[in-house]
Image 1 (cartoon, rainbow, N blue to C red):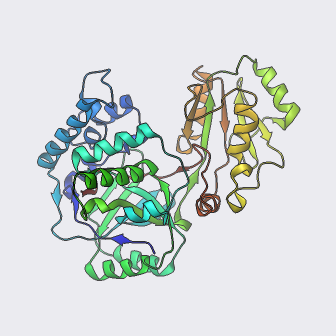
Image 2 (image 1 turned 180 degrees about the horizontal axis):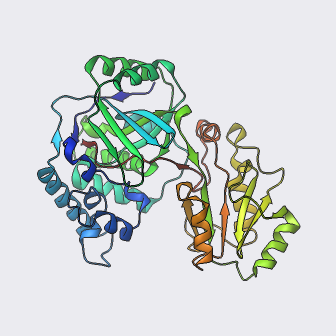
Image 3 (image 1 turned 45 degrees about the vertical axis):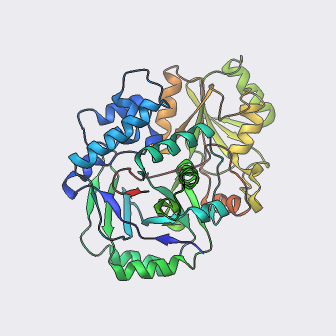
Length: 409
């Protein structure tokens, strides 16, 4: 069963929500966060990325950063002010970007179910990122950003969610990136009904926020070691969306050098292994192909029969990202571990292929690979099999924002 539990949210007043809410902590650099928060003392980035308020060059994992996070959180609670709801509830969180709309339920999921695998994962986490968010949660005694989860569609849940959106929303904010964020607080009757309906869902899947979920588990374990048991830390703040409404964009790759080759030599090596065409569309039309931007031109690369199979039975070797990594990034460019190699970087699909071209044309990268997006069926197949997707396989868009709802632990 999937536990979805109402909670007492800490949240801003309606007239301050637009100023408080902010992009997730992990989609911007410190410099980008500082620029976004400039001139706005209410921005939640002062809480999620507190190093922006410390001297340039401060170690982002130093004790001073977590002390600053706690200080900024308390200041924001007074200044906004952030108010703690008197009674627990669930919330509908609707995202709209252009013609794309998705509506999920914000509540708390079970850390026990995360630990037991009822909440399924598709990514490995990094120790340093887990350490960071665990320390952040414990410093604030709050989960300040939700885990983005999904489940296989249930029409009965959709019906309750649609009913909740007929009233006036608590918030209806259009963010600077054009995404519209609207939230509704649910009445007790629909809350009870949704709790019952989610209890019939066999599994939830983490779409985005693996480090937040892992850190919630670790923070709970730390509190138990200190003698605290049975509290709010047993649950993790989440927004749960039906899979049929979600949109996965490609997670593209840029490499900083060609491992001693010239562009012509790289194309020659690629042509000896794959079918390469000139003048390709920057966005691959089907899986099993990638588009390469190199030396001012786009080239299509057909990865052959090894690619395009998807993740049948949870086997990730047929994913485009896997074939590209094995045959090209590792085999030709010497990039063995994309999680640690500084010669590769990743660009979320929401930035478009123009960003790939800009990076190469500016000299900041030597080549860019534009990917076809992974499917949600592939993600679920891998998760159900207990497998792991290759690093940086999925980019969900639009993103949730931090600061609308906090869960005190």
